[in-house]
Image (cartoon, rainbow over all chains, first blue to last red; front, top):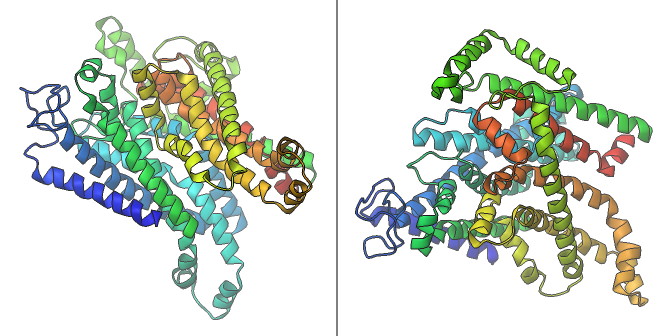
Length: 266
Length: 283
């Protein structure tokens, strides 16, 4: 029940954001020089930022960019984790030890610190689209170790199962065993790992953005919206400045609720 | 395998992990775009010296850089900071105390909050979902957003934000841990015999969940270290987190390697607190 409600709310939010971008006469980067830091008005329903850009459009775009980026990054990270976990589970013990040691090296540093370090070492002065791609790619590339460990444990348990031995005895090739038996059995493990990664990546992007290491301007993102809260002049003019942070929390709550429901049913 | 040799193997593995993490940092920073750029080039007073330094660095191979770093470590100063031009050990020593104090206070308060919430809620038969709502909401707020909100509302400070983050995370694990403990048959028996709730917690629950609590403590330290950077940057706390942020923004390799070394050591040795690993390795 909660799963359906969460999904419905999420779709409503996505639909509302897409509709806002479609019907609005403003672009997320368009500056209205006559309405800088404007409060709510007929032209700008939730006001504008310090460059006169429409806040509703920017929040809608940030929501879609954040969700799309995090979903793609979560899919990539789950694929990397699945490949890594399966490789470790089905390789000789010495190779498995090396692979697990590599994942431990990544896990030996706090994730946000590692993210910040890697993201800051990539070019920062490139086009906004490249920064967005780089940010989510870094999240995808660094998010796999914990997930890979869980998949490794699951795959090791399945490796010893009777039907796997039976499949081997029947002459199935390793990739056939993997496609026909292993991956379907690992689905209850992979799906929650993917779903957990989506809100985690959205929150991580917001944290990186707040440190100035997220998606570049003028492309809107949750992180750049949080940076807006540092502007005391803007804070005094409109309460709509809190809209992005409120919406971010709502989106993360919906995703968390959906993830825990799916995890419980899996 | 004896427990002692399991501890020795784990310690050796941790040391190796820390060194590989430090070596990885050197490689990463050395090949980062913009490594051969220096903010001092913008200032006419320091531009010439900065360019000379960059030219000298361009001649160095990764091996030479690693060797210089190692030499700095042996001297006990961990090299010289590129942006502050002082020994890294001095920079870290000043800031480590600030961060350690923040971490200690934040973790202790976080544990206290989590325990105070989880102990009564885990014993409830109804309304657990409602009581868990604050922690679910807190978990949904990124550390940076929480810190910014605190500054805006002029409420609390870095310790409060850190403790709320830890409390929200620990509460989730602690609650499920305690729920399992409350449901165990021997506890049902003890309850049926009329043992009071505080006595049950002291005599049955806490001894049963103690090993998992150690693992949870490790997780709290990792969570706290991760949250340290945004919290210190947003609240302008002069700690190691802020130094790390400043170092990555300026590609200050010696500082970055030293902080990576420090963080990996703390996480690695905190991981050794978990007794489960020893018993698994000893088995």
